[in-house]
Length: 470
Image (cartoon, rainbow, N blue to C red; front, side, top):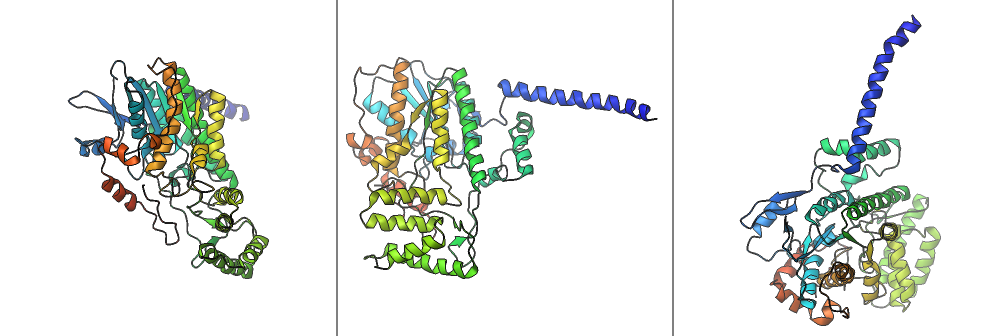
């Protein structure tokens, strides 16, 4: 009887093994060159011929007919003699809050044409607000069909969208779910990704500091690793198609954007939590006072003794150090506050390290915007002179981002035979002409852009005011 039961099960086991081998074979075949999932780029028909754009941008393009919008669609076939640069990424690259009227891509193209009129160049912007690397990796790989000379990847601030977080969480089931979502077979049959949302949880009523982070250190590490894997996939695909690649590090507003979510790094009693909240409010008032009160140092010492890992306190102590004439200490504290943020919503050290690592390992050109923004900052760290909020550049910030990308793109275009002068000196856009002159050349109204910036101002009552676009 036992032998008969075993014999009956054997065909079922062979069938299951055959199905497993079939699934594994299909997965490997798709990974070797098949699509990553639902296509991100669509083809639009028009009187001038077929154009390619991001899925969902059709209405935006139709509404912008006859207006000078950003180049968010490109001809399927480029004109002979034209050098094509394609930009992919998240909201920073898309130009929020000016999307699709203005972005660093548009300023990049304008500066290239102004400085080097002999080059026929187009810069196509396929970036979209709130895209994580899962989305723009697909866009980047699909865009290689347009035969760009240079592919620029500028993203990393939107890796923590809520629609991506379930796969990052600690535990066994999130690991299985993440593996399934990475499967090319699942991506082929899965519905369109849910709309992104990145709102942070609020601390308990009446408190500024929560008891724990929204994301643990291991969850943040998984997000950085996912970014690295996606960039690595882009680099591999670009190499196969002989397309030059530029990876851009991500700067953020450290000086004038307070951490989004502070949490305790130590276990405190209820009485200690109440004391911490009281002292933190006193520190907040001291940091904003016309004259720093003498007890500020005592407040700082007691807060550090209770818990040195609270992001909001670290940021406020940075502000006090800046006012005391200690810019190096202030800069270090502003950086540390970002690393302590329980809901960073912008690229921290691990994310930029992933970008630099892939550029180094894959031989891609690195456009180090993070270092460039530090060098351009008027204060001890990048702030409201370069940003509108926590991570979106102001118009001068966009021009600086375009400067950094342009330097990398020019070197690569020269390798591809672009008629560049034998010698030329790189000059920042705003040194060659004021920003209003550049906007006038692009046919953009300053009042319209200012209204867009004002409409995107942060609404939190204790958030710093948005920077002027000037």
